[in-house]
Image (cartoon, rainbow, N blue to C red):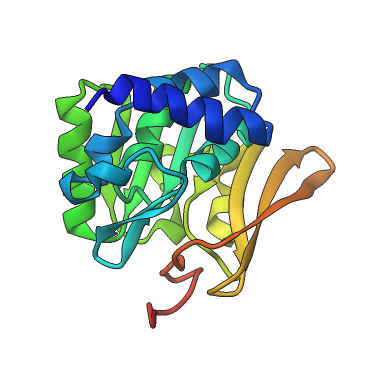
Length: 216
């Protein structure tokens, strides 16, 4: 398969028509090999307009959702980013193309190990992987310029707000287990400014400051 052409097709048919404009984001999505993160069983659908199962009850997000969440972060290349929910590692790789450093946390050991191996294989040297409760954040490395949560939360976890630096941006899906709205939070001197974006459906954020356990 010509995966480079498939990535170009994905960008031209799924992302640009839906309003993704950030050229750096589009370039990253043209570059990063989503099929490697999606896994061999998903190879025929790796660049289709859908989320795909990666095992352990988790998914690799729809390309459009990866694109809009990344665009909302407003990355210039100098940021220190915290990602909650490493999953396949695809979102982390996109972030690594666009930010200075990426710190990513995954609660499921087999997924964090698999993602770390993929980052190593693709020669990403600016991604740091940790296994644990993502709702606690990574306090030893705080503050972060940007925080992205790729799982659905009932509310924004307080530790993540505490670890967001001044003028920082946090992007998170918030709502019930089965229906959420994508939120963008900006930390200002006057407090947080919250904006609502597209409806979405993510797997639940499990942890002390998320959902207590996965009943899906």
